[in-house]
Image (cartoon, rainbow, N blue to C red; front, side, top):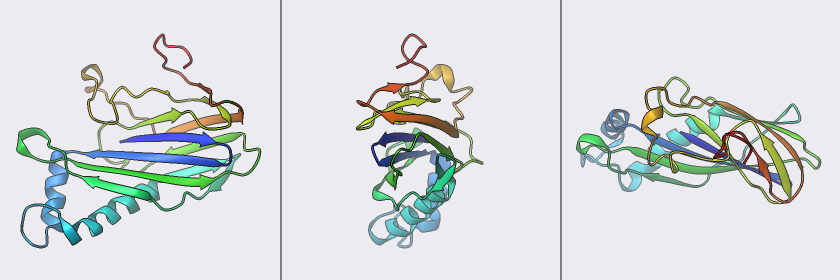
Length: 186
């Protein structure tokens, strides 16, 4: 999974990307395929998408200056089934969530414990916002291209980021983050 965070003046946006492997996808298709077509189509998509969104929402926690802030419901969620290995499908979920930030918010923390018991890539990425400068504990880059290609040298030990902190000031959309091309700030 990849959780992208954009902190702008008055708003935090959290974009969640889930790339679920072939075997869990196959198992879910068996469970949600009411018409026996071996695909999830039409009215079958709603219950599966809602289950995934509930799992995502229950695992995301946003805090501002030490106080919990509620993320709104998923905005324009997308469920798709890209091809995987061995002729099987993957499940891909893309959903965005927003939270209003109080004026003068200076410290934002995100915890992502959704699907915490599953193995695989878990990353948080910071993106530039509008009207803010952000100093982040996580990278501003994504080596997976939105979970579409995983770096082979990291597959044996996939990234396992579940928490990120962001210091926020008024600004021009500058992000300072570890992991730039030279290992320094981005």
